[in-house]
Length: 55
Image: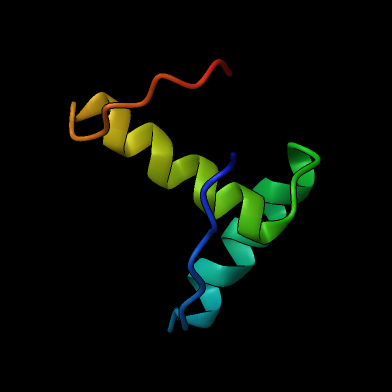
């Protein structure tokens, strides 16, 4: 069974948000999907995430 995702408020400056929106659009992702992708990638690279999911 899949784990439930948690939601939270993220305060982000307009220039950063615009850059993330553009990047997400370029990669055919939603902004939420792009932020989740970036966080997961950073966690994996820093070896802080033990993730056995296939991607």
